[in-house]
Image (cartoon, rainbow, N blue to C red; front, side, top):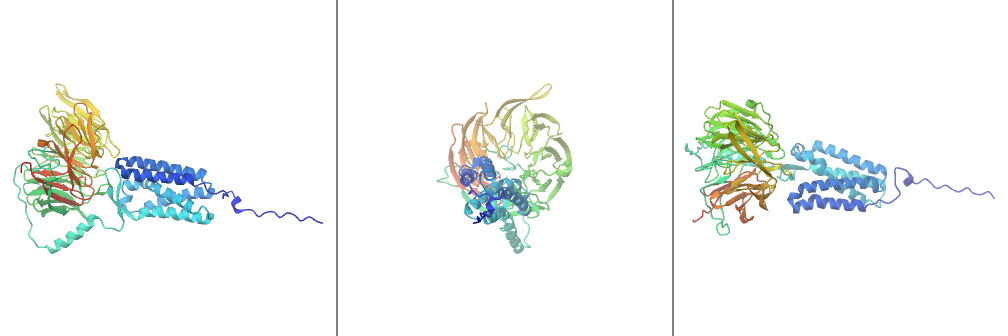
Length: 591
């Protein structure tokens, strides 16, 4: 009997080197993606200062997921390599179609990193969902999940970032606040067409709050005492009004206030009535500045002096306007005069009037003009970039103008621009210098992940010139763009997003507490009080004492991201952000 030859088994598809017959090993990927989402989103939500930690942890977990998928998942190699390739191609394609606000800002630069958690989730979900399915369905789900994950970013736009770097996200098809405001104002102005132009009553004398951070640019309110018991006598809203985007604060005089805003393609200086919030006049320049991180609009605050308003726009236009009517007295393009390009975040210098001279900073470059005519007077040294404003000080009896830039601190003579002294300290500079009662200078460098801190300089004029000596450098107070105040031997300000107090003798921290985001503050010197405007629009009263952090009161004032400096003029508290402004009547002490 002839033996029947054994039938050889048909080759299995799973035996092909491109496939794997073993079931997928899923548990490492599941654990890693859960850990990734907790560290990336849950921890920063519960503890906002941990955002950078969350981002880095999310990337680390993402790297772990790639290692798992490539070497330990048991997926066929064609799927292991193919999935990662599809992810890379999807991210590249997404960057080409996302909203301009995302493509052109920090979120666009960070999108590949921001996509890591959603791409990781898509990969793990597809692997888990198809663990008992064939390779065809798994590949389809992998490709579909990756495309859907990246597609989410194409549905969004951003209104910029918060101080901690988080994005203010909205659906792509929703109108911005500025678009809604322009539509509403167009309707109102159409109905009011033909109404007479109003003027503001402005006396030719010193203003109550002449501009950026007050008359001395030190954020100190003098001669005003308020009732701090807001539980019994809370601030009373006088008016509330929508305003165009911009990070300007206010100049205030008698019954009017001045600020800057963006309205469509026009950069606008507006005079409003203090009692009602209604506009008295507007001056428009046909320029628009926009960058994705902070949004549209001017960054500087108007300066009121001698019956005129001096304003500096984000693209470099310097105007001298009649404070009563808004009529243009003279105008200069500082960027052109100084041969300076517009900085990444726009020109942010609030004009400084010293005697008969107007001084502005074109980034880290000082420029001075005749206040009466706008004729250039002098050009200071060019020292990198920066977003600080020129600061007037008297050291050793000598008047001078200080400026912080990325190169450090520079002091010049107001009349000539001649350099008096310099101190090198490289870093991001946005805040103002501060003066101690002894005549020393405090300077700070900051950044979104924490700067170098605060440094005290002893500046002395000797026979051979000026000498600058570092007394101490403290990491206990690291402001970003949040200005500090000096009071009774201490400095009060923001260490990141947390309020802090340091001793001026040695820079040692006295206390740290109170989370107000990247807010701003002023000091009520007559009663040891800090008035804090938080990044989320809340106003708080905090004791300006060295013993301990103590918040006395708090109330919600405005909504939205708030980086603008508050103003207290008499018993009127003014706050604004890029969407709205409001005035409140505060009870004065003893009344």
